[in-house]
Image 1 (spheres, rainbow, N blue to C red):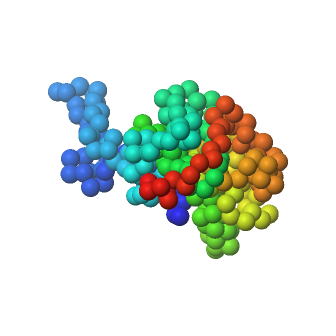
Image 2 (image 1 turned 60 degrees about the vertical axis):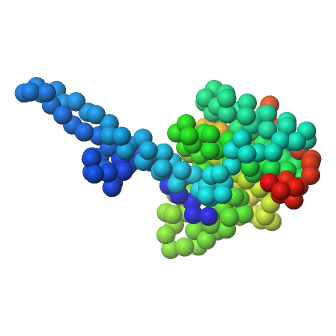
Image 3 (image 1 turned 120 degrees about the vertical axis):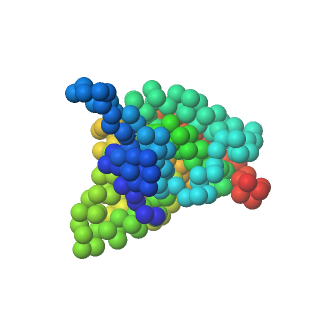
Length: 241
């Protein structure tokens, strides 16, 4: 997983646009007036959405996940309904720093549902970073021992500050002291600054506390209060997703 830069503000338009040449806008002046009119180029909105999608770290497979192609069962309906309701109320919830959490057995569709949420938010031009947590820890560990120390801190800052972070398969990996410290740094910053944080996990809350620590887990619980669901159902993949 390559952790992309989530800041898309530096590039306003498509650099290959033949109309604006990448500026994202046109300047025009009427007659001899000193007033200059700024007209956005059509490429700007499409390119910024493309940049947000690239920065989201979502694979082509995840980009295909939506609410319409999720097979709802009686046991997964609560998860589906909660996520769908969250998307409908995303403005107030993200502003309040509220995320959602899904725990439960393997293969119940947790990743699909969170990807559906991410795709809906991206379509509304909300910056999202979708993180497979074992890959994240491996990438941070590699960056920690690289010659470019600034890259390591950049990755931490990117995950701490982006509008929405989704931790998929949280604590699936064997969590050692290094990983536990990085989780706390990121999640504590998001908690203090009311940044919406979501996660899925096969672990119970007690297991998360044992792996991540009480302080980190309590913050995750606080950030997903009233938007938490536990699912026990048949393997979604085995049933033929």
